[in-house]
Structures are given as structure tokens and as C-alpha cells.
Image (cartoon, rainbow, N blue to C red):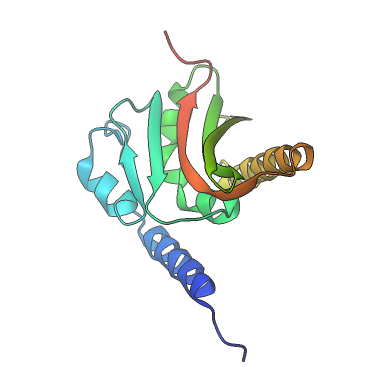
Length: 173
């Protein structure tokens, strides 16, 4: 068996936290909402994120408490099935959600900047909606965007994901 590096051990720890969180079956009912249920927020997001659900269901902000450049791990930790319950998807008038990802990039040795890009997805109000397919679509959109950024500007180096804004699109007035 090959030795486990610190970065692999950290990734495995995050995956273990996600699996433990997903073992909980608790979902808020239709009358509850993520923005008012602080117990729900802390139970499922406190370990991994600094978060702001105060404007939910219109917008929320999630900032990872760990450093990662892996969009697959990051998107899976968002636990979209918990944020976008059936009631939320049913009440979203456009059935479209915008994910605005911010990543920290290094342009030169002394110059860092935050690069923000959108991934817009359709989220229908189906009761048996497949969140794995949704996550895969988001991950693919992130990887395509970052690949094209670095293909066109090969001087950039990704340092990590800063945060994501999740919002209904277009934003309600």
C-alpha cells in the first residue's frame, strides 16, 4: 500500500465529513427554510463552510474553511439537495440557478487576484430530481471555464476556491 500524503489525507477527511453529513436524513419541511433554521445550518455547514443564508431562498454565500482547487470535492460539499429542497425548486419562478464561483489566482510571483465566473443551470421542480447529474453539470462547467482561462492565459496559477454565491436567475426584483 502506498503512503498517504497530507493533501490526500485532508481530501479523504473532507470526503468522510461529507459522507457523515449525508447519512443524516433530516430535511426541513415545506414551512421551514434554510435561512431561518440555524440548527440545520450549523449541523450541515458549520464544519466545512463560513456561510450566509440570510437572503435565502434568493441568494446564499458559502466560503470553504479549507483550501481546495478541486471543484468536484467543493461542489459535492455544497450538499445541493439540502439547499434546494423540493419546496425551493417548486417556488423558484424561472427554475434556473446561477452559481458564481470565485477563485484566487496568481498572475505573477507578487500578484494575486480573484477571478469570478458563472455557471448557470436549470433546476426543475421534479420530486425525484437527480442531484448527482446537477453536480456533474456544475463541475463540468467549472472545469471547462478554468481550463479555457488557463489555456488562453498560461501565466495564471490557481491557488484555491474562495467562495460561491448561489442565486435564483434572473434575480428577483
